[in-house]
Image 1 (cartoon, rainbow, N blue to C red):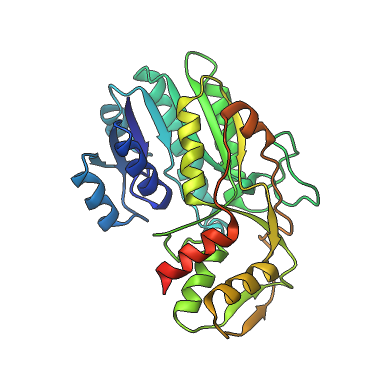
Image 2 (cartoon, helix red, strand yellow):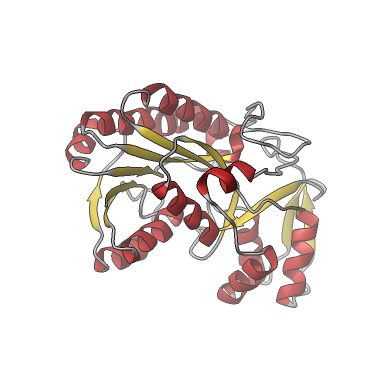
Length: 302
């Protein structure tokens, strides 16, 4: 299959393109390299990936670059929640208008299917486990931009373009940039530097952490499915940040202190995912337990 991956040189993209190449797909990466790894890109091109430097807001470049593909996987986005608070227009422009540009190019070039990387941030706060039918109440401009992008996809894919939207929860794994990373990668980085673990708020907030390898499995399921839909991608098990910190300290054997700071207003309190629909319709089945994933990540960080 010929696959176009926007943002294919980023954290998720690098792992995904590597997987697709190993499974004999022909992959082209379309990326402006704004938050990507050059070493990852070099490794992927050596394995056979094609690379086009470009911005998803550049219609003229993208329409030429997206001819002849069976599938588009749209990962390119502004992903920093704090940046979205400081510069909401810029984030909306890339995440919403950029997605519309990708959709227009898919339709114009007769690409049959698009897979979109969305986020659990669309839900906002909920004190119950969220299903895909839960009310979307994003707390940040980032979450709002992802929700708007989802709505554009549903609006524009009514004619001859299948879609799969993956609402990704808290991803962790090797090669994650600490600038954009979630709490696990930041904790692992702190341990490698003998710095205290910083927790915002009281640490009782919960998150569902999912390993990058399970996320890549979810994309593989999305590539293979014949159905269109929106799916939560998570482990199906949540822990508090306090529990996470203790687990990481126990695994590392470290004696670093935990430093509590004021909570961030854009942070959600509870993030618990129901993944029954992804199990049922996609055949998604997460395999990496949190302790196993943490142990692997910490050994790499050290």
